[in-house]
Structures are given as C-alpha cells and as structure tokens.
Image (tube, rainbow, N blue to C red; front, top):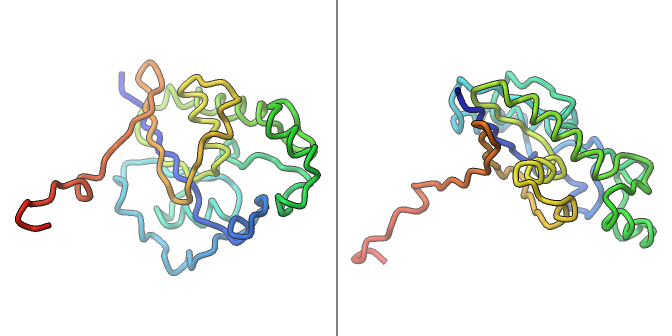
Length: 195
C-alpha cells in the first residue's frame, strides 16, 4: 500500500495578525504577486497543491505553484461576529468560555469541536489517496489536524503554536503519524578549525 504524505503549510502573516486581531478574509502582508512561485522548488512537481478558500491562503499557495485547487474543508474556523475584532476588546467572559469549552461558540460561528470534526473527516478522506498533498491553510486547521493525528484531547488545541509559513509533515500508512524532519543544510556539524 502506498503512503499518503500531507504537508500542511500555514499561510503567510497578515496585517490583522500583526495588530492582534482575529482573522477575516484579508490579504497577506507581503508582495505575494512579486514572490509568486518563489517556493515552488520546495516540493516535487508530482505533488497535489490545495488551499483554503480565503485570500491569505490562496495568495500563499501562489508561492508554491500556480495550480492550487481550493479545498473548502481547509477553510479557517468560522469566528462569526469576532472576525476582524481586536482580541483585547472582546467580552472577557465570552472569550474565556470559548477558550475553555470546546463546544462553545459565543461568536455565533463554529466551535472548536465542529472545526476538529470537519478537519478529521477531510483527513479520513485522504487515507485512500496515496501521494503527496501540499495544503495551504490556517493555524486552527493545522492544530485540529495535529489533534486528530496524535489523538489528543481537544483541551490541547490552544497549546499548539503554528507560525506563518511553517510546514507540518504528516504521513498515513495504515495509521496517521507526525513526521519531524531536519534541514540537513542547517544542521551540518561545524568544522573544529572553523568556529
């Protein structure tokens, strides 16, 4: 049986992230058109490139290739009326409930439980699709994928940090696994005579 390789890449940083606001359908904070295809060499041409429907994910996908297919299951968590809002200006009781109760959605959007179920269903659909899938998506989706693979409780959702443009490698061969890789160019031992 051939394995499924899933590389989850977080979209590039956005102006709202820099301002401490919840995401909306905003663009990335870089010249993504000028940087088009600048990261295309990272993955073989035999990969499938998919991305979330939001502008920031589609623009980031353009760094990796011009052939990205929009996958709705990769969309960001629906934050309802909190979209674009500054985190520090929200009702602290509602925010606290959302951060501690995975079934809670005080913003009127999607709960963490609902997001995790959606991502888990999508990942289950990949199990019969061998090959390499490069998916450009959001921190919340990547967190949900890690919970699914590691079979962690939803309470761990907020203990995972996902940086812009970071890559998370997952593999499926009868079971999902997290794969930690190294960049050999960066980890080459230093010569004793060259400090």
